[in-house]
Length: 97
Image 1: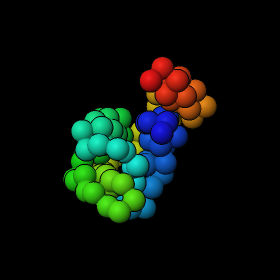
Image 2: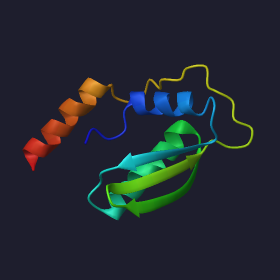
Image 3: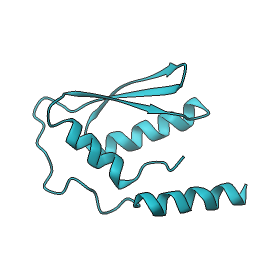
């Protein structure tokens, strides 16, 4: 609902500290929307998009951290919204529909 915000990218980097692959569950309504989210996550996290799979609960995005992964100095990106601002943005978009 909130889209991609800074906490998601931070948790991806914390997960990649011990593991190479991450699976993110998305409750998107359409495949093009989920693909857009997957491409955005790939660009923001610096990982490699492996696949977007349909599951019973929605869609699963699988990202690989890469062979020569180095953690960035700032785990939380500054160009993304915070969780609270992302929720306010989502509510405003829903209100305009």
